[in-house]
Structures are given as C-alpha cells and as structure tokens.
Length: 103
Image 1 (cartoon, rainbow, N blue to C red):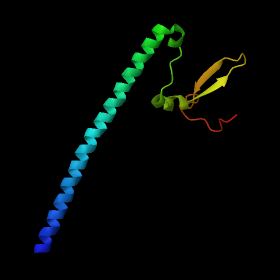
Image 2 (image 1 turned 90 degrees about the vertical axis):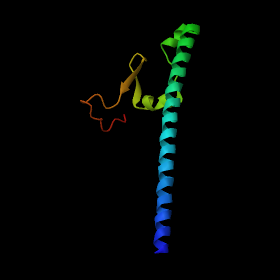
Image 3 (image 1 turned 60 degrees about the horizontal axis):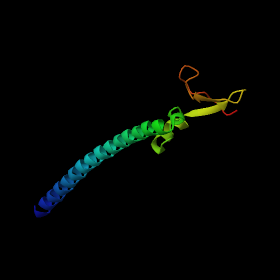
Image 4 (image 1 turned 135 degrees about the horizontal axis):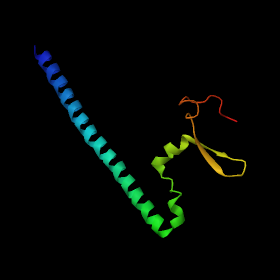
C-alpha cells in the first residue's frame, strides 16, 4: 500500500509541475506577442520620422526582419520598360497557386 501512495504523490507532483510550466508558457507567450506588437509600433514611428526627414522614403518603407516573410510571397518581375512589377503568387487563377511558375 505504501508504494501506491508514493506513486500517487509523484504523479501529483508531475501534474503540478506541468501546470506550473503551462502557466509559465502562457505568460511568456503573452509577453512575446506584446513585444512583437510593441516593435511594430516602434517601426511605424520610425517610418513616420523617416518620412519627415526624407520625404522620398515615405513611398518605399524600409524592410524589417519580421516583415520579410510577407515579401517572400511576392515575386518581382521586370516589365518591358524596366519597371519593377510585384506580383502576388497564387492570386492569378482564382486563388489557386500556379504550378511551374519558374520561367
């Protein structure tokens, strides 16, 4: 009977430890999300400051590390007159991704 009590105690301790870790994780996940949101605000503020200092930079925002993911989904093509044309992949055929787009 004594071994069964030990097992119940250890499983109870494990469950308590798991709950503590889950609470820690939730708290940390919240702070990470808040930090990212705060960084977006700081980046927006920097863009505003840059547009005051360098009016031409307002039309071309500075790429930020965590925004690069969005840019990867767009491919840039050169038109015949040399202007750059950004095309969003997967939007051309009713939202389906095109196959064999490498040309």
